[in-house]
Image 1 (cartoon, one colour):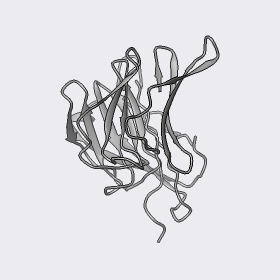
Image 2: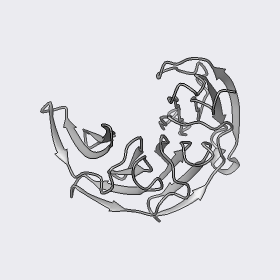
Image 3: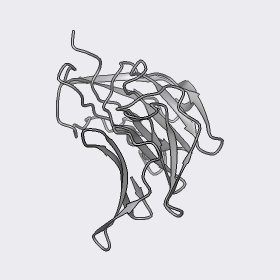
Length: 212
């Protein structure tokens, strides 16, 4: 994640989950150790809101963990746990909310929305097909029609198929309709596969369940 021009690397796996946090300053080309996660875990997901980093889920600790990091004080604060504990999940912020999607631990199709302002969760429309090992991004899709787009990719054990399902949420009313639209099945293993449809407002590409 990037906060105030610095890149933050949160946790990793080295035979066991490691909760270390490092910040990289491009201006000085230097890394600095920061306060570690209170509960070490790996394959979690993070998102930024209001200049703070939120860490969700993860393997090795509480799967439903929700912790907030403040770069200004270099401290972590526990927040309301996720409704569904998961790891290998994806998260992104848009419109003042953080959407935590997919992952191992539930049905792999969860879509839960976190409100940092009220520290509360709400369940939203689930993914059309379950998946894990995904990354989620959000942004504006036009100068006059701001919306959000989440393009995700999957990764996981060999027993899972190298395939993904594109999905589109109709914009700008998707927040009310909670509607997913299938786009195309993507047969590709590369983590940066892009969808050709520029009209996409929210798309998900990742692994979908065990191979039959």
